[in-house]
Image (cartoon, rainbow, N blue to C red):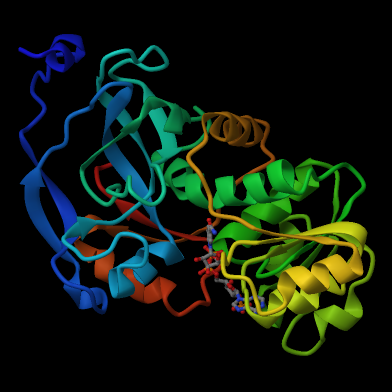
Length: 329
Ligand SMILES: NC(=O)c1ccc[n+]([C@@H]2O[C@H](COP(=O)([O-])OP(=O)(O)OC[C@H]3O[C@@H](n4cnc5c(N)ncnc54)[C@H](OP(=O)(O)O)[C@@H]3O)[C@@H](O)[C@H]2O)c1
């Protein structure tokens, strides 16, 4: 027995293998296969979680098609999940087997949530709010952390700030609207007309139909813009900011001339990649417990239908979140 084994709780009846959505090659949704693979074990400071629900994010289908930050397959995708702690590794004090947790695995190298079990740093997780089920909790981590880290950590959003949230009906956007409202901001969202009622229900003060109205003309004196579209949206969004305002874009590629234009206008442009974040997960759990944050579940799919979930997401028209079910609720 090595020192790691000595500090790990006994595996008990945990099976040696598990089902996971794996791909052997890059390509369309058809490359995703449900296969039997070895179950991971928790290393130092890690926990093994029996996954109940895991969300599907745009980064999943981008990685599936291009390898993006992971390179060549084989790999199992999925970065966020809700489930039950099965085993804890050496040194873990936050959780015990049997605890319900939700969290985001380290991005990008920690992928593997689209499986029956996943392993990750204990501090990537928080206790799942008791008031919601695993589907709801599993829908939140990556998208809610992106919104939290953009609005709160990066932009320093304060009560009374004017915030423009692009794609306010999307996975990140619909959570960003709620987080900004919970922080006391005035929120303007962009969405196509059929989604305006949904965005208003989330608490947005104004909704702009981006297909009919040029947001760059309609919005002035914003303190913060959250951009999830990228390209010319980054440059055009700069014009909506007050002097000293902040653009945070979740598309981590700067449009040509972005930083020069930001400097000229006296604003800041920040490109973010979401990080696993214990403090952020606790803040999200608090908002959920306070009834201030809920994911809209756009669809649920068994693990075996992961390809269908990717297809639904790739339409780029999702309102809310798509969730894979890895274990019965
Ligand atoms: N950097 C990071 O760490 C990070 C983290 C999370 C996400 N992201 C990225 O952020 C982007 C959004 O992610 P997501 O999960 O929110 O995606 P999503 O849920 O798939 O977004 C779909 C939504 O986008 C809206 N939309 C599409 N084009 C639009 C436009 N031009 N203006 C306004 N709304 C538009 C659609 O509404 P309509 O049907 O009304 O158009 C739909 O509701 C993706 O590119 C993703 O990869 C990056």
